[in-house]
Figure (cartoon, rainbow, N blue to C red):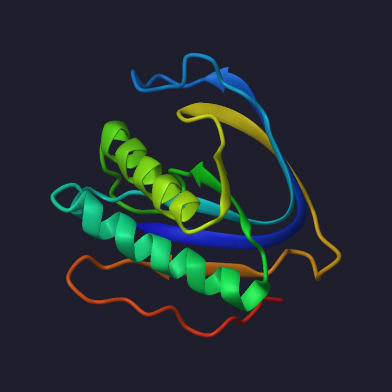
Length: 153
């Protein structure tokens, strides 16, 4: 799984057009948050045999960034444009749902943007533009420990 994590002052994603996938949300809703981590996530083909382990490592990475940034609100956004060999949409959704459940159980406020829809995202931040970005490859063959926070300028 690949994660691209932004810390934002505000973020909104409005579904605009249904994708071709059969697992697309039937009733998509807009997502709007403040002081949040926005997690752009791409599930990879290699994640398919071990979705629970992948969800566990992704949750740990998100929680580490949360500790560093002080944000307790998370938006999970399925994002197929992180240049990987993608898993099936069903596997991606399964992993994102597990991450959402784990984060919620740990006291986070969590939402997902409309799955398998094209979304029009809006973001603002008082930080440098672009917002601080984190990219974590979650290699299923190794244990993963996120690096210290470092914004890209």
